[in-house]
Image 1 (cartoon, rainbow, N blue to C red):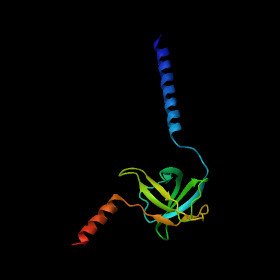
Image 2 (image 1 turned 135 degrees about the horizontal axis):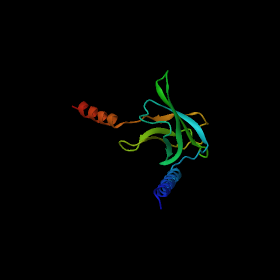
Image 3 (image 1 turned 180 degrees about the vertical axis):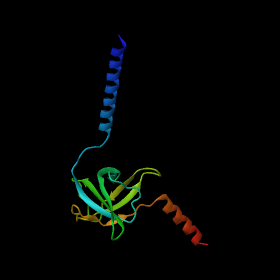
Image 4 (image 1 turned 30 degrees about the horizontal axis):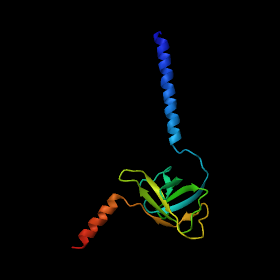
Length: 149
């Protein structure tokens, strides 16, 4: 076998391995384009919550963050997100921004309530809990410790 034939086979092998790896990654990734119902929520602090982050109920991904904007009048973060259209959110649903560990990605946790009324599409989740960073928690503990003296 001459050198050019060997290089051709080696190049084809590298391309096949690369394509196989890409197919494997695409199968593991959740790039499905499920139709979702749009909602929004207002927060004073959203930490590192970004477009594309997950929306979860009970630890299960049910949606995606669509946008994160600032209300220039109230200076609140307005988070728009989609939830799988098969899920209806009760009107007393709570939304909170959560982080996965110290350096983990942020996500929006929804805790559905027990109300028989549901939030209409493109309406707002009213009960929200702002993101609590490690710095916030430590400073609160220090303040409580120094306040007692």
